[in-house]
Image (tube, rainbow, N blue to C red; front, side, top):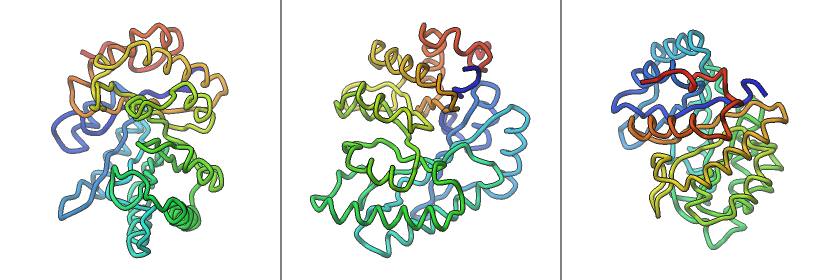
Length: 276
């Protein structure tokens, strides 16, 4: 199973722009999640010069990128204009990042606002999602399995039929599963075969995206073991330590390297090299 699991983290570990973060992280990880946004006059979308440098760094360090679409995109909105704007944002970012040959695109199947639970009118929400996904797959011109629907606060079983219908992949954010109190074992058994990207972070009460040292170590060990076992199918996956500061990243990386479930499976990974 050599090199079938690529370890990554977010592009916001240093309190700086994307490029300084990638330069810092490139020797340490295999993949970087580019967390992009563009709203209310604020934007971190990279320009052409930055894209060229990101591509150069990827070639130099055998690095891949996962692209996280902006959070304020609502493909499940019941407003057709909002859905149209969402599609335009997806296509803009796909075009912007195509030179990077992304490993995957992270997709939130949200209703009308980020973090909102699905509407009481589930049928309308799912119909809106169905239409948005149909347009995205048709207009993007890329393999539908590149789009990874993320497990969020609602039960993923609500959208799984649409994920299967449109032949999407999954981003299994196990931290969200833990925080919401869902069955982690069931989530792994049902979703890992379709999963292309996993998000791992510590959960402490109602706070997620914490260092793994604040999480339940038994739960972390079980999840990593399940992921390594699933990796025997030969599919390459990314495991993203989805944290957002240097302390949480370094402590999480240290804990991961010490995990008995990972040792022996990752001898050639960058994270087994000295990083302090």
